[in-house]
Length: 486
Image 1 (cartoon, one colour):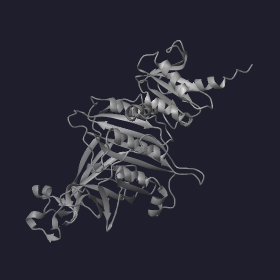
Image 2 (cartoon, one colour):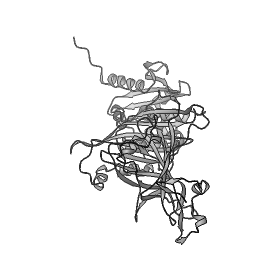
Image 3 (tube, helix red, strand yellow):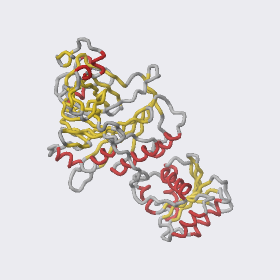
Image 4 (tube, one colour):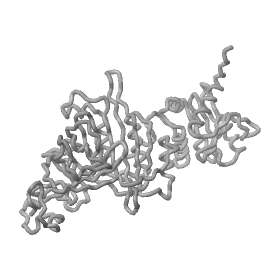
């Protein structure tokens, strides 16, 4: 004999019970918490207690429904929060009642939000947190209107740097490559400082996101909660080309239309996925976001992100863990934990013989508060190891290997001493590499220097003033690409 189907109201109640339990709450039906009246669901978890009512009907939630739940709340302890799930909507008078009488919190989930929860396009705990904050801080009953996220409106930091090639400036430059995966950076914070035998701790989070809005929402959350810098760098890898850029806004702009990048690079065929990484300083450590963008299979399919991970590396476990706990909850990683980073995953290696660079362009800092205008802080240069069979012996590392350097045509070289854009030097040279391991991506920071200042603001510089400080202070018989330093 076939099992009887649950009545419509009961079926929705069971569905909501499952949603609440999957969000990490201990929940039960037919609670007696609001005696003598019975409630649909009672839930506890995440330091919250919920009294849940389920409305499976076409009629909207009205003032009477709100007052009825408020009466039940008044028979419970003050920490209990009232929640209504409805297959319909909520009336304006009911919204005003919730906003005007906030001694007992009441949250309402309407049909559109329930559909997002069903499709896993929203997380229940995130919606509860957002609704409570809006009600407490702004006296506003808030409702999610779409799957984009709560932090889409956060103003992300604008980059204070730009790449200059000839007379053209842009936020990115592209390079030929052969399926390399490394990302180039201008700075790698040292989390090993003061840590004997290790590099602090790391928090690894796997993220379930698929759209550009969801990726933008993640960056909005990170900036709102922790603060991103304006100097973060990103790398996008395709089969035959890669793009390097500065600033999270530049990354999001480049991801809007990948085919525009491909056409500009002269590519008519591409791999089915491109690898994306973003690297930035994070308080006294660093963070990296890595993801894959799947390209459309045909005219009726859409691109989507997958295999997205967030890494945060710090010198030690913070005293205040609450921001990280909230981050874990927001991203659905409630069971995440800090892991100790044993040994050295960040390495710095100098070349035995510095190599003179073939410079293609410059990275210029554009801060308005610079006293002397625009400054060159990095270089776009031809990679001297591109398509070679092997690296110099001093660059062969057991940990944090640098083999991807053999497959990238252009590198972003950080300058240890900056120079005004209006100045002129005789040449630049590469001194070595710093590297860090972010699990699914290798972070590489090439660093170098300039030899001698030739002109300043169009005027010749005396010989005694022209040499760079590092070279002038070690005027021994070193050579740059076979040439003796003067």
